[in-house]
Length: 463
Image 1 (cartoon, helix red, strand yellow):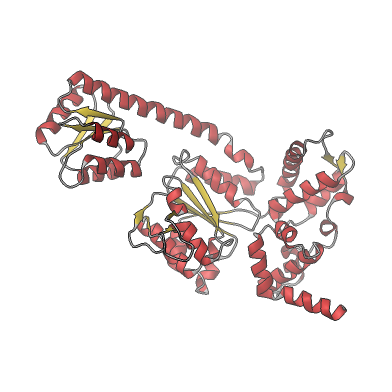
Image 2 (image 1 turned 135 degrees about the vertical axis):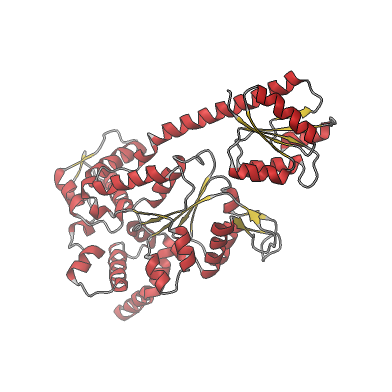
């Protein structure tokens, strides 16, 4: 197809001129440079459909240039040319991702044919990728159920920002679907064919989290028996989702800032920086602005993360979506549990679900429906099949604020933790599921408020 852009990289001026004249006659737009560094600069600043490079050049040779191009954009085909044929260099070029290996004194028709084939392959791959993205766009947000005005605003914002490389900070209470939104953004972007990697920053202690994020070198600490790639390296070319980013330590925050500013990481125990190409999406259920003002979170990192903020509404502000979500989860668990008789729900039970404030948001609702489908013995879920906490006085954080306007957030959180722990007979796994938080986060909160020791003291006094 005429008009496709080709970059020629060769330190031999006559070869650059020969290839430029021949390929321009075929209708291609040609840019020619004399070394690998200039070639990389061109690729950083312009879009090319094909690169043709000499293998032997002063400074950066063709293989090194090929490797750097593949790090920047794997979709660009690269043709390697050399004055002297060598099976070893041909194999090396192909192993590094070259489309083809040509001898410089090859016939003109052969060069033209290889160029056409490379561009045809690029065109087909691009068309396939666009088709997959169109199919994804029509289906990926269907996993996020809702038609309320609040959630429609989120969907609209996702559409606008998905195909950029801007860093995104997703805010919202636990259980509102922050990772689902992050996945939707990834699969609607030009990075959709590359990895989507996620990690919960609150689920790991600092030393393990640092190793998971940035990798480590052999011998850097006890147990580091071999080099390990970090998840930033695993996510190369794709999207990295950092959940509960507000839980990171000052040391980790400094390293995250380096990733955003320099686009590079240094493994634990290492000294050489490694370039990474990832889009960062972070999420938090905390008030990071407040954390910044209290010097618990770096201001410079916050502003780097908060380029495009997306705030997910809690379920209590999406009451119209509750029936849709209930029916979605009923269908899901009816199918998953392979029930002979499909279970529905009585209107009275649905009314209870709509009127409850859902402090654990969509995740809590999903758990309630799963429990009800399993325990309900009739064909319709009844009020009696719902957990007692849904039927008792509303003890959600929202209602507690209404009841006692002067209460602190810490007191609210502590009181609600106690309520859920007592309702679950202190079964922490169940409690963390209802609260919509990670089990390790629940343990930290129990320790912070001294709840475990208080319970033990009460048990001793009763004995």
